[in-house]
Every structure is written in C-alpha cells, then in structure tokens.
Amino acid sequence: MQPGGAREPGARTAPAGQRAGARRRAVRRRRAILACGLAGAAVLAAALLSGGGGHGHRRPPLALASPLTAGSSARSAGQSAGAAPREQAAESNQVRALIALGKPIYCAARRGNEVALTFDDGPGPYTRLVLAKLRKHDVSATFFDVARNIPLLPQATRQERAIGGVGDHTFTHPLLTGLAPAEAETEIAHAQAALQLSSGGPVFLFRPPYGGRSDAIDGIARAHGLLEILWTVDSADSLGANYAQIERNVIAGLRGGAIILMHENHGQTVRALLGIFAALARRHVRPVSVAQLLTDDPPSAAQVRAGPLGCGLGRAAITGD
Image (cartoon, rainbow, N blue to C red; front, top):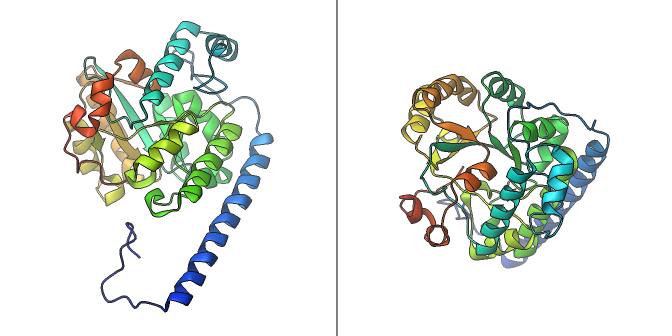
C-alpha cells in the first residue's frame, strides 16, 4: 500500500466481508501496539534519573504543566529552570497565542537572524552522535520523537530537552489523515503522555508524520495543547539525499525565521552537520529552539492563517518527511 492509502497498480480487491474483517484486525493490532508501547514507555520513564545534562549558556527549556494552563505559567517555569523566568514566560505566552489560532506553523516572521533546526523520528541509532555534535558546537535544536522508540534510548529525550526541546511525532508514525479521528487522537495523545514522562517535562509541540495534516488533525492538536509545527526547508535526507545534497538543501534555506526539517536516524544527516554548522557561523545565523524562534521572531496571525504562502512557499511545498 502506498503512503497515501492509494491502491497500488494491479492490486487485487478482496471481497467486502474480507476487507471489513481485515480493517477490524488492523485496528485491534494498532490499539494493542499503542497500549503495550505506552505501558513500556511509562515504566521506563518512571525509572529515569532526574538529570539529563544541559548547558547553562542555552536558554533553559520551557517548563510548564501545559501551554494552555493560565496563571501559574511564569511561576512554574522559574521554579523548574531556576533561570531566565521572563524568557520562559514569554515563550509560554507566545505558544498559547499561536495554539489559539488553530493553524500549523511553517516559519517565524523572518525579521531576525534566527532559525530552528529540527530532527524527526528519533530516538534511534544515530541520536547519540547528533546530540554530541550539537553539544560540541553549542547548537540548539528541537526533536520530534516517535514515542514507541523511547525504549531504544531511555535517556535520550531528557538530553534532547536540554539541547533545545522535544515535540510529539505520534506513537507509531502513521499517516494520520489515513486514520479514523479517534485513532489519530490516540496516536497523538499517547505519544504526548509518554514523551512527557520520559523527558521530564511538558510537550507542547507536535509535527504530523509526512506532514499529513487536515482540519481534523489541527483540531486534535489544539485540543491537546499542542502547537503544530511544519517546516520551511526540507533537507531531503529522508528521500535519500547524500550528505553533500543535505548540506546544500539546508544551507540554501538558512534565512531568518526558517524551520529546517532533518532526521536524526540517517547517517548522511550526521555527516552533513559540520558543514551546516560552519554555514550558520559564516552567515551569522543563530540556531535556536522552535519555541524561542517563535518568541523572538513571532509570526503575525495573518501570516499563520496564510499557511505556507505566508512563508513564501507554494502549497505543494510540504509533501512529507
């Protein structure tokens, strides 16, 4: 079956009764995977150490009970991080304001010199290498993790939070637009819960796998206090680009306000990072977390409502990750 759910050429069609039975079995399998995976992630997360590393020179990650929680936002941020409470409160307020619009974010306002590097699909076999390179070169990034991968590297999400931030990339990485609304909500909500447990803090950012969004998916994200983050620049690492192509694709898009899509489970991406970091330095472009980018260079409501066109992109620009 192709990613969008279309039948492959020449595929045979089973009788209606068989198809219905197959659908029911698929739903049961997915629910079982989600239930088992969430239980395992919760057990692992509960056993994690409260530490996780971090660097004092970076803005501490936002720490709120929920981006939709009013009243105690600034207080909880200050108590958790112990530093820069005003900055964290500003990030909280900006995230809440953007969530209220109910639309995905493709870029910031493009008035400054900051960009957000993002990595999808972890934790995975290259996560430690990515984190090591980011720390060594003092580069912030945001990680959109698949929750069923948490047991592969139980400490990774805490380390990613210290580097910049952690976001929800669903529990099993399905194309959400191909699921029933209840199944899509389960994927999003269970991942958010598991990632909050494993990372030791709130998760208020969300990226749908393959960029597969709809009004219904947007609504689910908003209902769970999640700001939907897409991207301005696709590195094409998930499409088979080699390290030189990945470098070129990213460097071509290093403009203020950009959100860069990469994946932490590709060796070619790891190899491309040093060239990308060098280009950031040459161009005096500062990599920050997604939350910080949207706070320092906030997009207007009109820009957000314009979707990819508000970032100078065509409507077909967001095609998948």
